[in-house]
Image (cartoon, rainbow, N blue to C red):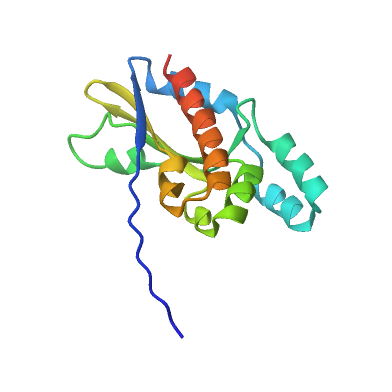
Length: 166
C-alpha cells in the first residue's frame, strides 16, 4: 500500500545585515565552526559506537558547537552574468550530528531539514546573513522534545550570525 501525505510548513527566516565586508563576515563564521575533513569524519562516524561518535563530534565542532558539512559558492555562478560581477553569495551547510540525532529520534522528518543552511550574500544595503529557523520547520509536528532541541539549535545559529555581522 502507498500512502501520500502533504504537510503545510510555515518557515520563519532569521536575517541580520551588516556593513562589514563579506570576507570579514565569512572569516568570523569560519573561526566559530569546525571544518573536519568530511571523508575521514564520515568513516569515523560509520565505525564508531555512540561514545566514540560523541568524542568524534566534539573534536570536529568549533566554539559554536557547530561544524561545516559543505559550502556552495553561489556567487561564482552569479558573477558569470553581466551586471553581477561583484556579487558574493555563499551557502554554508552547518550543524552538529548529535543535535540532528536528538531531533530525528523524535521527528524523523527532521532529516529533511538538518544540517541547516546559512546564506551570506551581498546586496545593495550590505551583507545579509540568513537562516531558516529549525523550530519553524518542526512546529507543525507538535513534538515538544524535538522543538526544545530545535530552539536550542536556532539560538546557536542565530548567535553565530549575530557575532559574524558585528
